[in-house]
Length: 343
Image 1 (cartoon, rainbow, N blue to C red):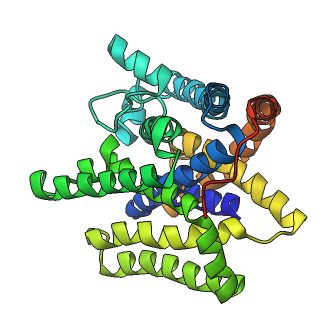
Image 2 (tube, one colour):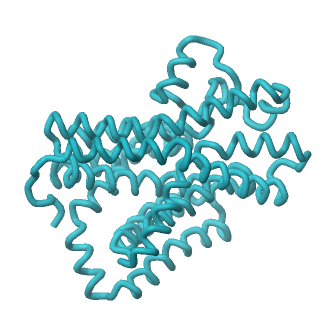
């Protein structure tokens, strides 16, 4: 049931950017990081392996998954910038503009090096998080995902980074969230969930899946509720979200083994990435056409339906055909590997 959760996380990001308050988007992004750390470690160990052939197949597959929808988002942004007055677009998101120098063209084309800074162009404004994801995909594929020991060292590295920011950067929010180092802790948590998955499953079995879901989902929702009531600026809720995500993730991974539920879950999950890529552009377009006030309920509801429809269209026109190629890459890259390393 992770696909449904990813869809809901994408909606949290849309809420944070196109509605209010903004902080659910930050919680959602870190939950995405944990899920990615878990899934990348899983597929590397159980589908590809860490051989040269498996490594190559993994990265070809990642490229095919990330870049075609991303370039669709870039084209969407180019049309927005060309057809809507610059003052209107940049008044909503100052990063949504054409690059001014060659390095910005490179980062926008490659995703690598994109940062969330107001003085830099980002044709897909939310793509800075993809840049961080690519960094940690690489770390996991060459080292962190190979063993439980590496995963623990990786986790310690994330904790040390957080301590460094706390003492030497006065807990500066940019370094705790937007900087590439900030992704270390949530990605490492995801890696370690994979390596301890068998033990976690035994705990879920003893408690019962329904009870495990109720408890983990309640704690996850309580973290959001406390942040809403007591204030998102309370740092502890931002990091408690990592803990509650870690509790919920394996329960949803075990999921409900009903074919129709799994099929619906997969379809919803496929919508999460294009929603993440397209929502800023859709928000600008809706605001320009309708005149709705930015971050109003009317704008958010309209943008939600439009971006979901566009995500569904993208899944049919772009990701659907590409996924058939990705499947062949997975089959070609799959090698005989030993027993999964979690347990």
